[in-house]
Image (tube, rainbow, N blue to C red; front, side, top):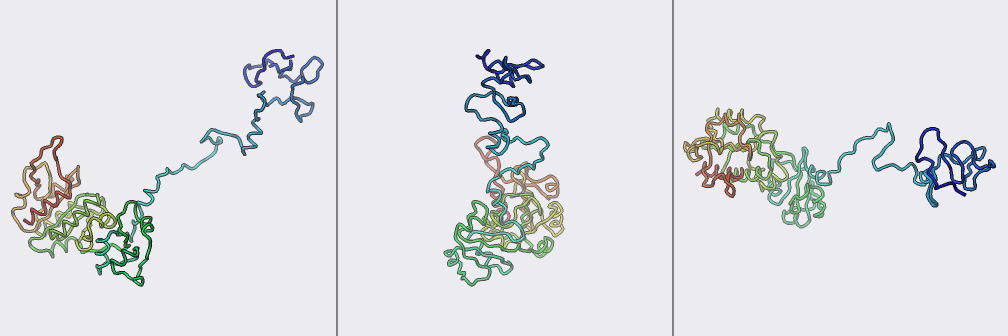
Length: 347
């Protein structure tokens, strides 16, 4: 007959007190019972002397012991993310998804240009070195490309989808080509006409804006587009797509120091006009003198950098009827402002 409710051997009591086992046994080295025999519910082990398994807590019927469970699972169970003491692990890279993995495709020394008009201009440009043409059968027929054309690869539409950045509107054709090389700024500025117009971009990084301004340069007869070697979009991909082929015809000068480039233009007789909203001089007044002129556009938000602004001959603003209040246009998109400035310069 049991002396009381059953108690887990590992629970309760500390110190040297003995703990009763079911059936009157104790947790001491004695085998329990008055006659020295093992109690009827004490489990026998393979140890010498038939001692009960002191390391195993009492469990309800049907429970699986820790050692059996560990053997079944292949090892001790741990909380998710737990590891052995002293183990050294390498941090995992975060899963950024497929977007960033695909977004870098097309970068490198032989970038991709896609879109109907952009590719058509590339194929018509004898100065381009073409490394590969990916085209669907339908687009190849429109472009007049035969199977025997050098570097031509006929593919399905979804093949081009996976080769280009996500969301690229390639229209069934993409070209990998070497970058164009143009004369340096000094030579272009010196060889230009007396009424030459040059557009300078101060750290404008959005490819859609730069592509749109390349179209404006073509439309208004700009002699060159000047950008910084850093903080400027590459002249492929989205930039070339938005420019609809004007990358092939508008000279682009990549300069390390924009402020120094403005001084170079001034040395060749250019009046440098920087667009800034905080000045009182209007754009028509600043451009009234004629002659060679360079228009400088700053990034949306920060505008012209301080040193760039200081190296302009004059700062001018586009007259606007709106006010800096909610619901009215406080400023213009940089490509829109460039279009207005180029029109005014040519008017």
